[in-house]
Length: 397
Image (cartoon, rainbow, N blue to C red; front, top):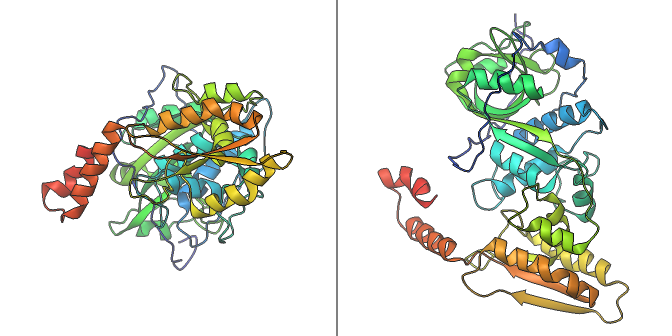
């Protein structure tokens, strides 16, 4: 007996994370792990089952489920306001390994990076409705600072012991896997029957486990599975699981002095970068090595964001100035992006006090990045064949 007849056409385009040796790996602690983490215990927190519709935004919705749970369970100041899946999804595409944002799908790492860099705003601040207003506005930036990400780690998705330990420690995991036809044939017991016919990649939250497998909370509405939940067997997971991340909330902070924001951006500061981003973003135009706007990375600039700088940010800051002056700064060669941004953070305070609005053109022109761009351009000019196709990304990394 099936839970729901028929099949709904969904976009399954979650992309597996590429190899990145910079990922910090979670290590299981020496504490007793419960024999089971019961789904009924998780349900007591009443985390809403989301519905992404037919858009391929599962990374945004899966991570939103994780954030909603962590905020609800926060001990000191619980926050039951739902977060914005749209912000998570848009930031995921900004921080993915693929250039630009003009494509469907995203990776788990991209979504986690977006949360780390920016925080996340409330759902009513950036609604999910499909529209053209995808700008990271000042209102959204400031609201996102209330929900920063703290520590986060990649979990070995083939290590069941580590996954059990991470769930027992935090209560929820952010995961991706390949999806097969069995996901549309779930029984009333909530178990996903295995099928060898794959359909694509998907992101979701792992919220419980028992002797048979992991219980997941999906983002396909309550009509899917067992009220929006389902059991993925361990055999199925070991064959098709792709990525797992565990995370904890950070504590919101407020930097009042401009020099503090410059120090917070320096290489010596180990923290979420969302605070420095909020203040420096309106002063940066990010350029790629091809001379076009660079929309990816921490300080990427989209055409809409560029317009917003001139129509909103500059007029707001210079509103009461006696004489409005704009300083355009383009750094020299062999300067890394981080060094250029740190330079801006250092002189921003003095210029604003002198009623001069600094606007800096930022691009990566340090020696290694320049060499990497040359290699990338050279590789892209020829047709990938054989071992070159599979090894070029690893070589460039």
